[in-house]
Length: 200
Image (cartoon, rainbow, N blue to C red; front, side, top):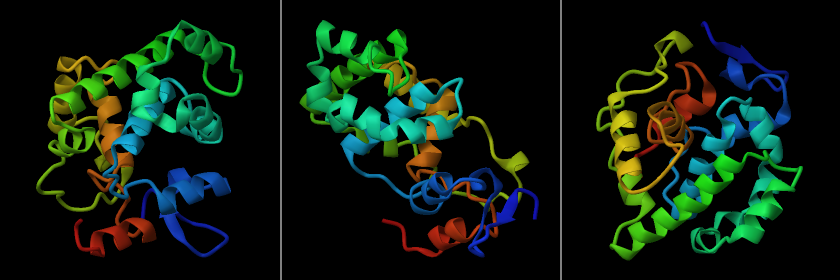
């Protein structure tokens, strides 16, 4: 089937995950699996923003450094980052040094804290845009959209609350990564296993 490949380990996966053990682990163990934790959703929002214009593999390789640099994406801690922290991040060659994205990450943490103070959460807000009907599994990547009405609505809701670097395409990538949609191709072992699980 178009878009699938079978690795040396005998596992059939989406073809984009072929080539490195890091990509294969991410594909098999994380991508498309439901994430219902504010900290980890904040991490995914942040990394998807930093990924814009770059290979996701670059971000995966740098993820341990990102976690260290951004206080393991503790929202309250990042919301308190000051000019010294921003300067520290811009001098940290282990991460992607982009001033606009660093500033956006701090602003997004502040927005997430304000959401909490109003009695909400990233989990509740983001998951409210998960499609109620996932539809059939895609059989090729031509059937996987770059954005959807739901991701557009999510982006608008986040921007309304002060979040930045959260366009419809970035939000759809977040939905894929956090299991709000399952875009593993039909016949991919990880994706088929997810579809057989009872929804959380």
